[in-house]
Length: 238
Image (cartoon, rainbow, N blue to C red):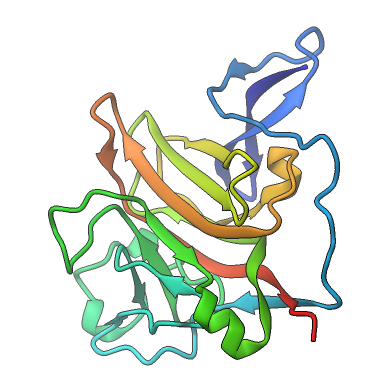
């Protein structure tokens, strides 16, 4: 079995997704996406699961933009993420008509990049994590599972724009999980990333998740939008 990139056309837009297929039966283009398959399912040492759909729509924006509160739905988002309300009249002329669809559940979506307004010299991926103090206050185990999210690149990607997702296990005994997808040229609708199905790995008991998009051999930063982030928390034993 090998990792390949397969072109799909879905509802008028195209994406490239990484899957494993037998090479003899599939005409596809080789991908550099890394697919991790654990030897056994992650142990379930919790007494309850709390699946949360984070839509970002309860965050009040000013002129169509806002910072993400910290914590927000128990997660801490780095400053490389910020909130945008694409259809806010204040953003008329500042956001492409082709990006008005960024909010899957209007009005808000999350914009990610490697730019940190509180430290412009920092060039690290946008990330979110569950802090130990927040977990203790909320009665949660200090880790979470990543289930799915919608994502789209802003504007029309040039050839060679990739999105990367990396999940860091809460314990240091496991290697980070990674998944990537190349955006085809042109404008995009948001598409649903079912991370475990697409990566063939269990994104469970994570301490932090990073996302970033880059372009070309110089790995230039490319902004992207995320919405309807679905994660799973675990109640702590009492």
